[in-house]
Image (tube, rainbow, N blue to C red; front, side, top):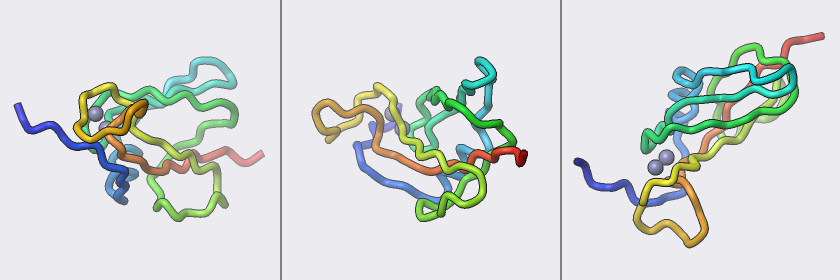
Length: 106
Ligand SMILES: [Zn+2]
Ligand SMILES: [Zn+2]
């Protein structure tokens, strides 16, 4: 056992890079994709549905990245772990990051 990670709204470039490298994508239907992977901070299994668009790869981008090439999807941990200091009604460990979802050109 390790000490529980306290809740903290935090992002690091490595979160996006880790998520981009480790998340997998499942096509639920022609319009819905499901991103699956582990939170880069606390390791919780996460599922993030994405609606619309043609998936053509993803990569981590900086939190300030502009939505220019493809679509930047903001993601956040939504685990149900018991993270100390978490505000009432919140989920997750506070980690957030952006993934750029490549959209195939027409
Ligand atoms: Zn987390
Ligand atoms: Zn967690």
